[in-house]
Length: 165
Image 1: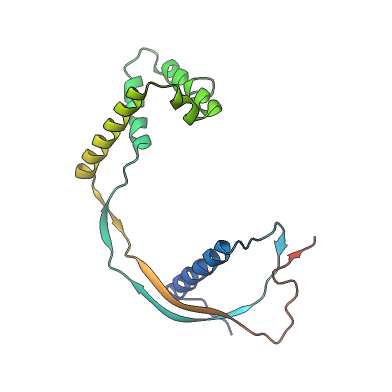
Image 2: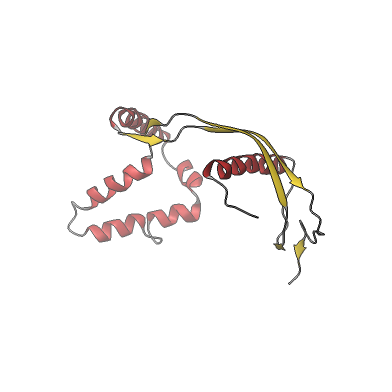
């Protein structure tokens, strides 16, 4: 008889499996390309705690703000589309940065301009922190326990091995 997992059980299983996957990857284990068949039963035992939900400031993302600045600036031109295309098109300034790579382009920029950008970005982040509305964030979830594979009577074939098509 099978039954669906509750949200608590699904969350606990997921969190513990994530920990196991991270440990395996940290141990340089990988999955080779291919299709894998599996059929196994696990037993999970442990406990899970969930902190209270909180309100947090929205992340400061200069690129989100720059879109609004650039579009507002473009609107002042008689031909805003041409200006935007010259700046952002793949054949324009942005395309050149993509092709050359941002680090290479920044090496060709006056260091004083980079310093000014950094100062402006820092002060903008400070203002953003003061005025941005808080957003809801779920409390932290921590799980302690173990997942063990339960032995099965039937033979497991090709578990962990790619199947051949």
